[in-house]
Length: 161
Image (cartoon, rainbow, N blue to C red; front, side, top):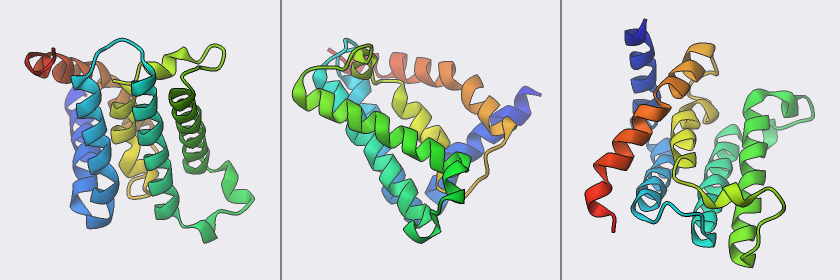
């Protein structure tokens, strides 16, 4: 059973690198994750700016992949479009909060951004319409979230101050 989810997870990570169109969207997310992991774990306005940029970048790339012409009223209820809109709105709030140096009420979590890039990377091939949303893929993303975080956290610890 775990082997099935591992293969699903590997497929999610490998898929963006099999298409040149997707590489332009995924590489900045990996770079943002790396830079977030190398900065302080404390919430800051600088990390909120990093989160905002990453989220807006991903949402813009997904919108480009989807195509502006295809987004009609009935498409707004599709899971991909809803996730894209949610990611864009969170990114916009994070970016504005970072520049203004003030979080909206109950939104200071936007300054803790290390883990958010993992989810953007994991859902990237699904949101780019290369793979479909399935319960198996969602389970694989959630199942490997903590191990991915631990690997990044402890693996990059020697490079952190």
